[in-house]
Image 1 (tube, rainbow, N blue to C red):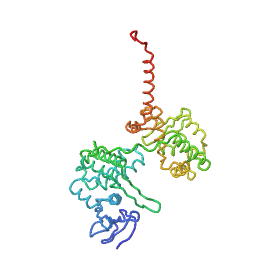
Image 2 (cartoon, rainbow, N blue to C red):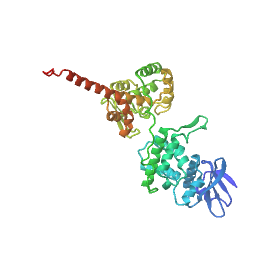
Image 3 (cartoon, one colour):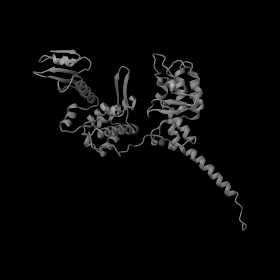
Image 4 (tube, rainbow, N blue to C red):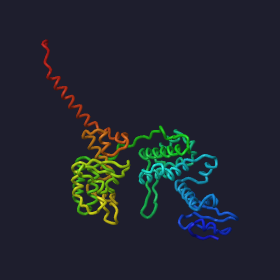
Length: 407
C-alpha cells in the first residue's frame, strides 16, 4: 500500500508492515516499513534509469536528517555522480571529492559567516558544474597535483560546457575557458582547505597548481564610447530614471553592481564625500566619491526612506538593471560591452591617468593586490610620459653644459 503525505516521526511510527509513504514536498523521498523497522528510501532517475536507494533505518536517521541525505544524493545525481559509486568510496573508508564538496556546502557557511550568499552560489555552481562531474568519484586523499592540473586543462578546453533548459524561462549556459578553470581551481582549493580544518583530508592538492591567466579584464570604453553612453543616458533618463542614475553612478565610482543597486541612504555621507557600505564582496568598505558622483547623488530624489534606488514594485531596491543596461547599450551602440566593464573602464581611466595600482585597488575595494595587477599593462602610457619628461630634462641639462676650452 502506498500513499503521499509529509514524512514525520509520527507518520513513520504509524506505518504498517508493507506500507510506503512518499513525501509530499521532496519528490522521490519516501519511507516504508519492512517486517519490523521503518526505512527511509529515495526513488530517482540515474542516467535515464529508475533507481532505488536505501538511505537508512528509522532511529539511525530521523525524518529530517533522512530528508537532508535525500537532498544530498539528488545533488550528486544532478552533478553526474552515481550515488552507488560514491557510497562505495565510503565503504572503503575513503571520503570522495564529491562528499567533501557536499560537506563544504553544508557546513562551510558556519566557518565563513561573513561570506555573501552570492559567493556561496558561485561556489556551488563551480562545484556542481565542474568539480563533481570531473573529480567527484575520486577518493579525496587520492587527488594529487597532477590530477588537479589535468582538471584545470579539461575545464579550460570546455570539457564541462553545457547548454540546457531548466524551465520555461530558465536556461543554463556553461562555458569553459581559462577564466572558468581558474575560478573552479580556486573553489577546489577552498574545499580542501575546509577539509583540512575538519580533518577530513590530509593535504590540499590544489595548492601550488597554477591556472593559465585569461584575457585582459573586460573591455575599456574609449572617450568616444563614453560620449555615446552619455548621450544614450540623457535620452532614456525620462523613462528609466532610477536605472539610468544607478548605471551613471556605477560609471563614476567603479563600484560593483550590487554595491550600487542595494545602496542605502544611511550609507551615503556627502559631507565627507564617501559611501560607507555595510556589506560588499569584501565586507564593509568605504568608497571615495568624486565631485561628479557627489553631485549626481545630491540630485537623486529621496522617494524612499531606505533605498537610494528603490524598486517601482514592492519595498526593496531595484531589480532588472541588466535588462535596462541591455537597452541602454543598444541605444549607445556598445554591442558586447557588459555592465561590469564600467568598473574595468573606471580602473583603466585611473591607471592610464597615472594612479598607482595600490591606490586604484583601494578605490575599487580589492582585497588582494594581485587582483589589481591585471591592470598593470595599462601603466605603460603614464610610465612613458614620465620617461619622456625625465629624458627631456636631462637632455636640456646636457645641452646647456658649457663647452670645454679645448673645443
